[in-house]
Structure formats: C-alpha cells, structure tokens
Image 1: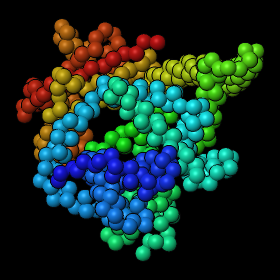
Image 2: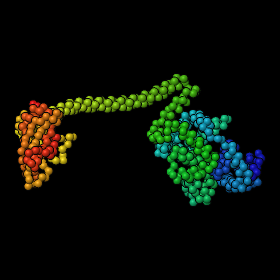
Image 3: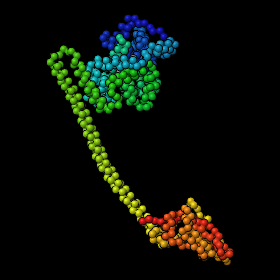
Image 4: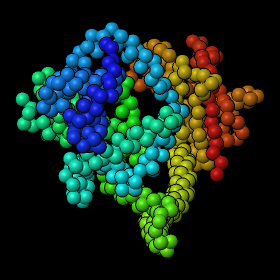
Length: 181
Length: 338
C-alpha cells in the first residue's frame, strides 16, 4: 500500500472542514488522528500512525474533490476500514511487522530497572495533585475509587477520564525517558 | 444491538475483550470515532482494565480473554508493561496490602508529594513557605512519632508477654524440680525399706530352714538305685538337735521267698574311716518293694568331721557266714553350726 502525500492546501481545507476556528481545528485534527491511531492499534496493526495519516490524507482528498461530508469523524471510520483492509492485503505488511518485532527492545533486567527509574522520575515530575490522583487510582479498589470520586465531587467516569489523561502524560514522559530523548 | 448502551462499562469491556459481534463491534467503533467522550471512556476503561489485569483483579474468564487479545501484540504488551511499572512504583511494598493501608499510604504519599512540591522555589512569600514547610514537617514527624509509639507499645506488650511466659516456665521448672527431689527421697526410702524387707525375708527363710532341719530329731535320706551320682549326691543337713540320720535303701527285687540278712557300713570318703556298722539287718517290705532301713546316730557324722560318706550294703551269703558286697552309695551330711 502506497502512503499518499497531502498538499498543504488539501490539509488546510480539511482543517477548515473540521472547525472554522484554526486553533480549534488543530485540536480536532489531533483528536481525529488519536482516535484513528487507537483504532488501528486495536486491530493489531504495527504501523498505526502511518495508517492513521493515510486515512486522514484520503479524507482530505475527498474534501478537496468537493465531497459533502456531514461528520468527518463518522466518515473517517469507513475510510479507516478500507485502509485497514488494504493494509491486511498488503504483502509488505508482514515485513513491516517483522521489522517491528526485530526492532522491539529486549526486555532484560537492566532495561527493566531503567524503565522503572523513568516511571518513578516521571511520576515525581507530575503536579502533586496529579500524582496524588494517579497513586490513589492505582492502589485503590473499585469501592475506594468510587469513594475518591465522591470526595472530589466527580462521577466515576469523570475520575477515570481525568486519571487517564494524567496517565497519558505520564506515559509520554516515560517513553521519552526510556528512549533517552 | 449496542447502540443504546454504548457508554456502559459492560459494553466497553466487552468490546475491549473482543466479545461483541462483528456488527456491534463496527457500530461501536464508528461511535467512538465520532464521539469524543465515548472514545475517552473507552481509553480510560481500557487503562483500568490493564491495571486490574496487572494487579490480578480480573476473573478467570476475563483474564483469559484479556490475554488472548492483549498479549498478541508488542504494542499492547508494552502498555501492560508500563501499567505494571506504574503499579510497582505506586505500591512498592506489595499488592496484597489492604485497601485501608493503600488509602493511608496514598494519603501519606500525597502529603509527601505536597511537601516535595513546596520544596521547589515558587514566587510566594518566604515566611509563608517556611511556615507551611515547618507545619508539614511537624505533621510528618507527628505521624512518624505516633507510628513509632504504636510500634513501641506493640513491642513492649510482646516483651511483657514473653517475660510472663518465662516466669511461668521458671515457676513450673522449680515445682517440677521439687517434685523430682521428693520422689527421689521417697524412692530412696522405699529402696531402703525393700532392702530391709529382703534381708528380713532372707533371715526368716534361713531360720525356717534351720528350724526345719533342727527341729527334726531324725533326718531321713532316701537312696534309690540308679540315681547315685557323685555330681548330685543325696544330702542331709543335721543340727545339734538331730539325733539320727535314717538311711533308706530300696533293694532290687530279690524274691519274696528268701529274705536275706544285710550288713551296712558307713565310711568317710576321705580316708575310708568307718564311722558306723551293723549286721543282721532284715529288710522291710512295702507293697512290692523291699527296703533296708538303718538309723545312724547323728553324733557319728558330727564326730567324723567330714561331709562326704559312703554306705556299703552287703548281703549274707547262702552259707550264712560271710557277707558279699551288694552296692555302695555316696551321700553327704552337713552339720549346721549355730
């Protein structure tokens, strides 16, 4: 499968289609991309970022071609499925996966200790309130979490999502630390 | 159809564990791609699911389905590893702590975290920071002090219990020692009594034997043909009161029609000294047996100063003049000395 390039003009049209406000359009774009990456990850793809970008490129082309798209997010699902099917039929996919497997880090004790250090360091780098929430969320059981949510005046879903966002930040920090960047 | 229940935890978990039908799965994916809040819910619940797996909180079936999906890819395995690291970093002591302990620990962690954040320079009044810092440090010290006090009290209780047990053991030991000493004393007393009784018994036995022999004025000694032996001689015991020693010799069958006359001679074995003799002894008949019975004065044996003797029995020959030796018997006579 050939990953198509996208012109700046096509990309601008897509952003405008996502939201009239350029700042909010950027955010929408990131949301769309994140969801598509997640979708491809869930499907077991080893190059979810590339497949997500390919999906967005194709949507942008459709927008450029003048196709009326009521809901870009909803529309993206159909495109993503096609991309996924093409990816599954692509013989090169196996090589990509093999390359990924070969390049995946070996899990030895030293590396594990390093990852733990990174996690510890990144946990300490969080805001105290964030760290507190993550630690509590990590050690509490279901009832404890419900109690915690009540004490914070949140629903359990809101608490869960707040914890998820902090964890995402934490994992990004950890990834950077582990890779040494 | 899952449309109406997309947002429920149950549906999301079923999706995450690949339990939805292909159709429901497609609808669900389309829904979370276009619905940001659902997408967030899915991600958040997925993180929790991974964390629960790491903490061992999933049921058997859930765990199997989770592993089938999440262990199948390097990326998902990496997420599990990251969650494992987070759980390890958050609860370094152990995952088996009770929820209460977890809550306390997390609260303490929060206090420490806040303390740590206060250490960082901030554009706030110095005195305010110092006061807050001191307050938190003091708070931390108070908590530590309370913990230490609690631990100390527990250790003191334990020590007191151990001392009580030791005292009890000591008392028991002393009591057992006293009992043992008493039993030993009793044992010695009983042994002495036993020895005394044994010696009394021996004296009684001896006296009885002595009285048995001494009280009898005539001591009988029966000599049966065929049992004469040097190793086991016939033996008689005489005392000062014994007057006679009666020797009975059973004769071999001679025929009742011609009773013969006999002579008995008693000699010492040592030296062959004759101490007593008698002739013209007529045998006695009892049932089918014939006996020669001689009664020898006990003094003869006492005077002989010996214990080993022989009795020679001779029979008068058919001419009626000479005696022919029939048999010799070996026997012992012991004189008791008082």
